[in-house]
Amino acid sequence: MSVALTDEQRSRALAALAPRLDSEGGLRVVASDTRSQLRNRELAEARLAEVVRQALVVPKKRKRTRVPRGAVEKRLAEKKRRSGRKQDRRHRGDD
Image (cartoon, rainbow, N blue to C red):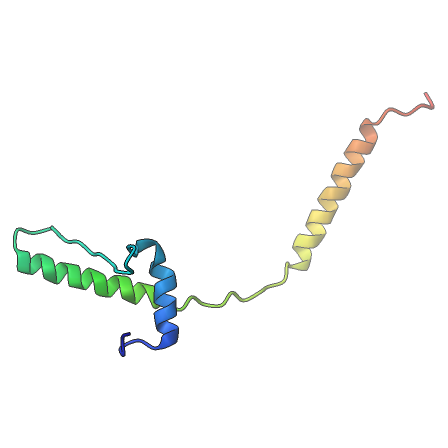
């Protein structure tokens, strides 16, 4: 268990990284960008740090908003117009 992360952060990271974890629970990051093994290792460590940093980001809570009155009225007016159009298409038996 890591002392660098709290239990909450650890559970958040495990949940976010679950698809990337292998059967033993390890996260594999590979870098073969350069010919230098040392440079590739540094790049892999940087990528690992970025992946973990992204996994620890707490998403913002969604602020619920109301549908504007104008939008509701516009939708209802359109429904009424569409209903009237369909009413006009109906066959009337009093011809």
